[in-house]
Image (tube, rainbow, N blue to C red; front, side, top):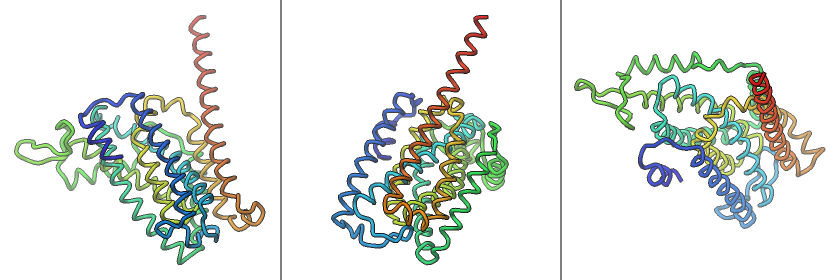
Length: 323
C-alpha cells in the first residue's frame, strides 16, 4: 500500500484534496475489514501456527471469531488514537511552514519509520508480558493517568516544549536551512549539505509518534498479547494516518470532543487492564465484544456531539449577523 501510495498515486508532489484523502481512507478501512475476515479463517485453520498459543491477556486460545473481534477492536482503538496525531502534525507543518504539496512526503516516511518503531516496541512488550504478567496492571494505571491528563490538558495551538527542544538539538548537531529544495530532505547551500525544513518536520513527526506509541501500544495490549494481532492492527491504523490527516486537517476545530472521546477510551481500556479477571468472570468470553461496542459508542457519541454543537454555533452566528 505504501509503494502504491508513493510510487503511483502520489508520484508527483501535489496538494492532496479532501476527496482523494477520504477515498484512500475508505479503501484502507475496507482492506482492514477484509483482513479481519482473513484473520478469522487463518486462526480457525491455524495457518502459520496462528491460534495455537494461549493469549496472555485473557488466558484463552484465540479461535477465528475471537481473533477477528480482537483485531477489529485493536484497529478501531489505534485508529482513534492516531486521530489525535493530526492535531500535532498540523501544528508542526504550520510552524515550519511546509507547503501542502510536500506534506505528503513527510508523512509517508514518517509512517514508514513509525511501523519499524512500533514493531520493535510490540516485540519488547510481548516479551515483557510473557515473563511478567503484572506489567499489564502497570500499563492499565498508566493509561488511566494518561486519560486524566488528556482530559484536563488544553491545546494551545503551538509547539510544546519537547518539540522545541528537539528542534534546538537538531540544529545543534546538524546544519539546517530555512530554504526548501522541492521535496528533498537536504539541500546544497553555498557548497554545504544542509537539512531542509522537510527533514526537521520528519524528525518531529517521528518523535511525536514515538510519544503517542507509549499510549497506543499499551492500549492494544489491553485487548490481546498476540503479537500478530497487535502489530497488524497497528499497521492498518498507521497506514490510514496519512490520509486521515488530509481528510481532517482542514476541519480540526469542528472535532471539539475528540480529546474527550479519546480520554474516555483510554480510561476504559485502563480499567479493563486492571480488572481483566473480574470482567472475564462476570461477563464471560464475550467481554471483548462488549469492549468493541463501547469503543464504537464513545466514538459515535463524540462525533455526533461535535457536529450538533458546531451546527448550533453556526446557526447562532448566522442569526447574529442577520440582526
